[in-house]
Image (tube, chains in turn green, blue):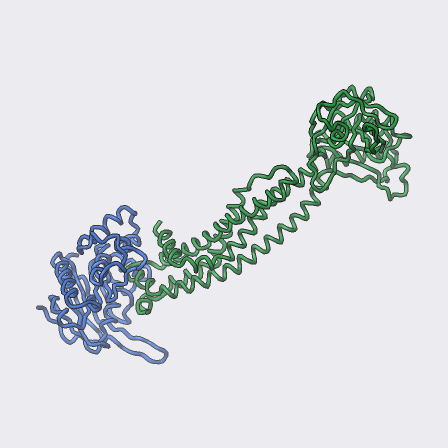
Length: 398
Length: 229
């Protein structure tokens, strides 16, 4: 394409001027691309920091501020009934924590004990052993899965601890599993203690009376959580015999939505900065293109004299603007990718242990869109001016 | 068609308007140039030479009168149609060469071929042939700054010939050259004329005009002499 090679020669002949002209574009595109790259990893970091919280689980608890708290309180038998009657509920258990002293050699350390089931709420992967079985739950077996922190404390020499006993208060549990260290960066939202026992065992051992302060449910798939939350709350109202009692829900999307909301606001601010820099850079580009047209008035006259149509002159100068903007956005794209990746390596990797793949397609499309918009908005007028020059006057121009 | 005149100007009047002032530069000028002629247009400055050249070169339109170029009435054409006429039927050679400094000789000659829509390979071949015609085949890859004035003007002539025009228009083509180089360039024009080209040259130099076969003298917007030699 002759227009492109000619335009390239012009830009290269004015290298310093061209670079200075597109500095604004470089900064704008660089900032937007960097935030794009970071955005992907940030979303991943949010997800990873909630990694222990099962995607398909949700929690329902009575609104503590309502007048009839006593009626609204969830009973153990309500959970069993919900699991039996609401389709799509895979499991229903009480949520609870019991703090107790665990014997470590001759010392005692206080740890939280919490319930779980065969489909775990705490999805932190296993390092040793196994999850609970249906039998563990049915028999209310005295078995436990310990967190990595407990494992490090109780078994400083390492090795597979399964089969060993753990003494917590007056109870003895056989260790069947050890979890890997969790990846929580800024939030620990597993609602799980350091020692996990079958929920039936937990109820038998630590729950006084028949009410629990919250129910934990597992949906058949994460997408049906919103509808299941409604179904479970309705079922609870039926079971409790009151249509006016209120329940609250909590699930993973509520956390991620909150964090993503903050992050989206940040993205919007950066997008605005990008838009402002686009306008500022565009005015500079228009200015330099008008200078270029004025400098090359005679050249334009010659081109017209030898038979260039107005459209061909327009195309030549427009391609030059496009190439100018394209180079700027290309450089900005590169810088943005590098900055994004560096921040990823420095900050995000520590949270998630991995970084999201670079969103190449989006980044390239954003940079290309910037280039085309800038060239169209700010390169068209100078090119039009060039194309309208009178050849006789242009030829006379010194 | 072939025995029709290449240039036929009838009653050409050109009036420049500047605010309330009107200045008539050409006063009903008639001029006919046959195919294959080598015509020099002479006259002192202010005689209307440049205006006539701009009209013949389709860079400007007459205020009155008709102009037929190669059988086409160009008086009523729009800008794009005039550009097409300049591209296909006219070749300009300027006093100051007016080559593109960034492009080498070959690309300068290829420029009109690009505007004519030829493919890269064909452009290159035709441009190369034109450069050979003016004796500069070995300078194809040189930029104008690496060529002498005479060589630059030869490249300009090759560019003017690129699309095989009906008329070659030269405006003081030797004005920037020393006498020895001028002589070489005028030999080239004579050779082109010998090959059947129609040439229209504006000059104020009698020695240069002496190479032409016909001299048209302008004074105050009128043709005062028109002599075959």
